[in-house]
Length: 90
Image (cartoon, rainbow, N blue to C red):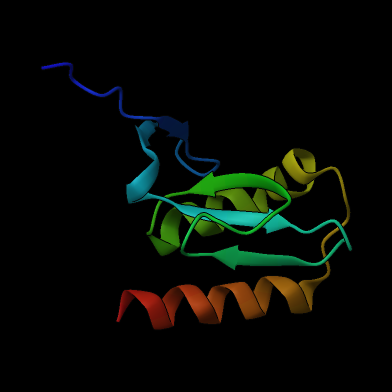
């Protein structure tokens, strides 16, 4: 029986490589809209963060989302993502 390779992704906050299923994808859709993708199936450019608020804050402060997704992100978008992340963790 062949063992399947587990896809790993790097967290933008802490820089650790973790299994893709344990992480949250931040997506920039073809229309330019940025959102959290808990399913990992939305189309568009993606970046990954751990499910912790600390990693989200680290990535936000260092502007890693903007670098990874190649666009400017408004403060209101960060607030919506932070709210979704805290709702998902509770």
